[in-house]
Length: 358
Image (cartoon, rainbow, N blue to C red; front, side, top):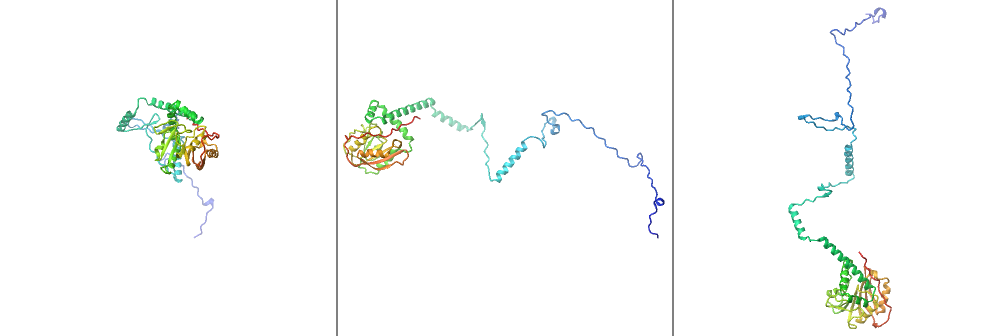
């Protein structure tokens, strides 16, 4: 067998001619080209109109309902708000912040909360209001306000007169107008309610520590509270007697006998421009080594050392002082020698305490 040989192209190659394909025969039919569908013209969109493809139509039972479907590029901020709220909530949880849910607010009417009461509670409230209502509450309130202002104005006027005149002129003032004393003390009671402490209460505690046999003189006693608060014998004295057990007299000329007292008390009563006569009278009625207790408003003292020197000239030495208490100063003096009442000395006084109009 001869090895495989490729014959020459000219002698060994047969030319194969392919017959043309018959398209009309029974063979496989050729695919027809696809016809392009004509493009539908889109109707022009009106401003503010919703596209038809974004509307769902429900034709059941002959009723039409539309629901707007928003696309991914819709400019609405609802989704963004939800996302931002979610981010804020995650941030609060990660940072450890927990917010309590607020209870639902009450129904409002006209911007105001409505208070819903049970019928029985409403009836009880109406009955209580009817029982406590006065015929003219506004008129009563106005009258009481005017009365308070008039009382305060009269108190300030009398107070200025007492601080800026001598004790004799003050006595004449109350003799001329008997109602002035009551008006003054009514205003005084209003002022006491505004003070941080009542200095008379501290003096009462001090008197309770001394022997019950000590005889006390309350100079400028007012309503005589000291005599009602201690077991000691107390001579209550003032320009006008508010009670039958109070002696009406001038503080510079009392009816007490000489050297009859163990203690003399001046609680907010150093009023006037002649305090030297006050303490010369106290020297006359006090026993030797008798005590003087003083309580006065802090703002009335310009120089405490000068005040102590003035009392030393009247025969009293300082034993104790308390000037650290807010609003008031407290002193205790002792009579160390007798000083005649007719001794001539320079008059002294404290600064007037003038109450501002409110």
